[in-house]
Image (cartoon, rainbow over all chains, first blue to last red):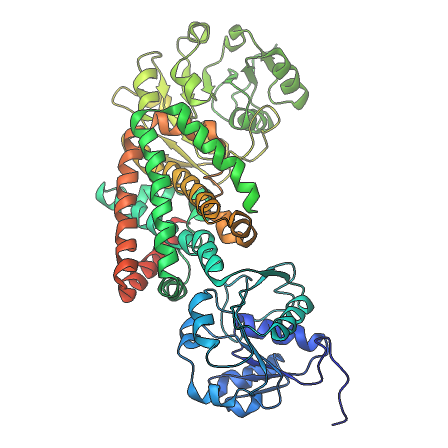
Length: 291
Length: 291
């Protein structure tokens, strides 16, 4: 092959992807559309074959040697596999490559990986996750979505620049904060809603069954109930993994949530209708700030 | 006028509507399209003028005498006005008319109104309520939606038949249950989600402010947070009114919800990840039953 021109990331080397699920596959599709050469490591031969058919990368292999020559490697793995990395993967990562991840919890990932590779950048592209697997990747997934990076004291600033180029090439909004602040924020706006919605499903079920009204409760549930429980009724493995990896921040968020619910319940109990209306009006005013 | 033919409700008399907001206005539009004569009582002259412009009824007046000659009157009023009815309205209701309401809590409405008029039917057409006021009424609002009636021991069965004809003419699904069962069910699937979502907004706000991360928390909130808080960030007057009129059932629902949340929190606290995954899997399996 003739010497390649500089690509949109300012490099002549290919990008390596580890994992071709929703996030990895979507990165692969977008990068190739931008003229970047993409090589990918996957777990199973059947995934490799299907990924090649879908064109998620130019080369896909189950042998970590496929990553050779890459100067940027994106670990698009589930949190558990990220936190207990395969030794063969570690051995195959090019020693000077910038390595980044896409995990939804950042503290433990940063703590582990900054000791494993010299140019690690902890990052979290926040894009929809309703689909999973090799069929899930789509073009334009990151367009306008936050791409959060959480550099540590040891993070190489030149590596951060490389990941920023990647995020911006994919159309994401670059956001930089501490890992602890990130994990606290996602506990509040992403992990807590899972438990809140799951508890609501459980309560509606228990209440209906106890009163012998299970069918009536189901028949009367409408779009409000459906919306409130959407993430609570989502993928249980993903929910558990997030709780496991972000336990302390989630427990803190739960404690705040209990306080807020206690206040509302007390107003109902005491018939403080003006106070309740004021609290609900505050919620109504707050919500657009989060949209 | 020449003697009218029997209309779709099996009557020659007009239908009276009290209130022309989302529910009243929508009933007026649909009934007229079905060839039924509709007369409406509203509070303010400006509303009457606009309602006539919109064609929500053939006659609209602020004088309760407009209801004269109606053999079915639908009280499409907010719960508070329904529970403290205007004496002039009571005096104007034709003595043999079937009277029904559209309130979202049924116990107190039935208790009051079955003592006020001889042919009262407590009912709750469950249709979307994001819009309100004289501009809100639309055609087809009740199509495929539940129309719940909660007859009491004194409810006239012939009056129930009239309301059933109305519900079915509007395309709604007829559902009959006790007022207590209705109020327990809506506490679980409609009123509890308001408090659950409002508490989540409050917790996310408090958590962000306490940590000095208020902006970050807002920036990272995505569609999952938006969905979980949609009804919690809704109309505060409506939420308060529902809590006030359905307090006992709402407190019972809150107690069940606390139990469910306690169980989930305990699993997170104890690191019982298999138990947590099983609980979340139960939620995932339950949710489609409510849709």
